[in-house]
Length: 113
Image (cartoon, rainbow, N blue to C red; front, side, top):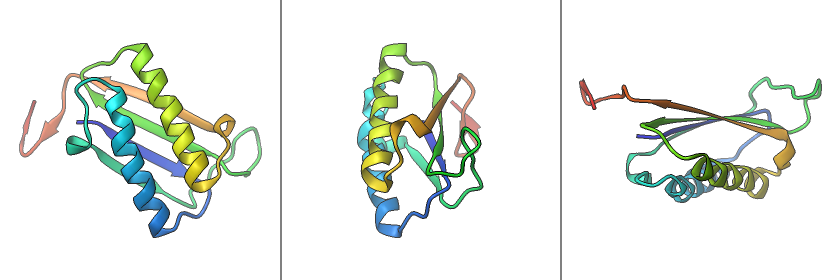
């Protein structure tokens, strides 16, 4: 039950959104037991976002997961996420933050896991 929320200050075409969504689906497998089958992805383009006082292309990515993951797996996922954003919408990896949140309480379909 992962959720990846991408906020960026750049424009993102529908084709790029689809490409990012698909690439995130492949990337989430860096965390054992996670797959695109349960992944939700949000993309918020043209978000008011400044980094280091500048409005140059940047992104804030929040990854929420049910359960936990090793630092190694999260490091691999960070590498994938930054690469996806660089390749698809030209954001340099040093202008991307990735925040992780883990929880044991996750609701779906009217109840919790």
